[in-house]
Length: 566
Image (cartoon, rainbow, N blue to C red; front, side, top):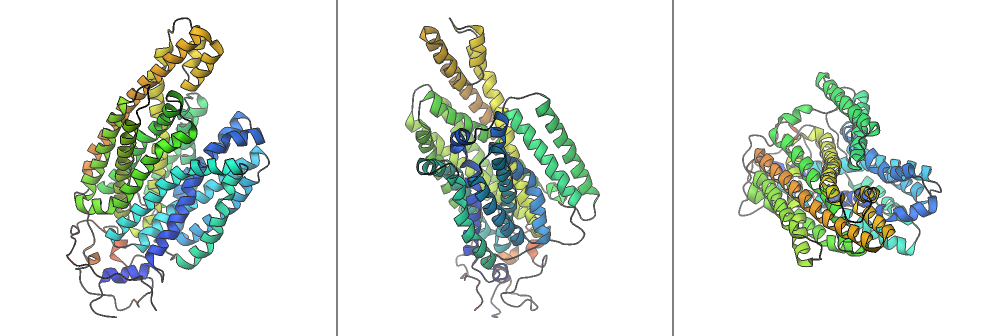
């Protein structure tokens, strides 16, 4: 091997395990696309499922929620298991389970079987999601290339979330509701052999036994916590909401105490002592807390206030998705130029500005205003999440990559659930008082209309006449007022996130050996193209990236091959 070959090039070649790392990225993005699409594709199929299977109210709730509940609760379990037994192995098992569960869901002939299939899809999704990020960290040891890869990865996630409802609507127009699940199977049949051939295997530190009790405690705690948060978001404050929340908090506290006492913990909680890691996780939670509930409220505004159809609503939100894709693709360049601190803070501030701009929405359609607001919203949100995810993943040691990815995905899910609960409560508190004294409307009708705008329209239709029209106008006015209040609260949360992001590093740091101008040295014991032992690279050290030199872009960069040893 030439003496001019840098250590960074050696690590890229070794990490690729004989495959072009960019081809590996394509495989990982296809995996993520399937999971992201499946999280939203069922939403448009709920009426068809209800008509065919005739589930009860509780059964319908579990049909919709089984997937995200199970997936969120098992992310840490499978993320850390991948670190121990092999991330590719867990990913391939996730592919298999996802395909089998998709077939079960597609041909389910009763609600209970569909619930079981959706839960199994959640298990498969929990295997796939952290594995994609942890493998991505392995095959891109150079932080500059990894930033670009994460940008592409996050852009694919944005596409999947947007494509889900549109794909579901198209399939429902031509086929039965099971087709929204059946579409997963051909892609999985391709991904499984391709992933087995191309994806490199990697493990973390395998010293000590895997903490099965800790993994199950974390899973149970997260399941109870997410369930309680979801019920809270639905406006339920009874024992069925408070008990899961309390149980989740207790179990997670026990999990943390157990991990601190163990010599070989499931998760190295010392990662949270690093300001960049803990701040990145907090930024992910706060970004989702401020925006996911807002997205649901905006969809109601478009349909119930402006009277747009579901398809027209989806098309109005498409610019948000394209802006998010653009931010993901430009994220690596912005991170190099501005650094994590300014990038994430700028993303929060831009999103807050977009939210304040959208307070100009009223009872009439203003398409240019919505277009501008949604574009700024999508670009700002993706800029924030990109910078936070990249900083979090780069701060984590390589042998904990699966656990770190699971923490990031869990933070995303919890932030989304809390956001729906918090902003939904703010919306209801601002909306309901406007319907308390509508002339000519009975108190019982006003109380029913105060639950939601959709229910207010139903009550107004039953009343009819001047009273019904007065209730309808009052409900629209109150909803717009509540939307403005919710937007301002969201802007405040986003500005708090901008202040939190000031704890992130000012510059994008890289290991000096990873820069093209680094020392031209290579370990003589590692043959070209062979995968290094776990923990042998500088990137695998817990201190990787800390105290290292800021990244500088040289005038000329080394030529990067595919990493294939012929």
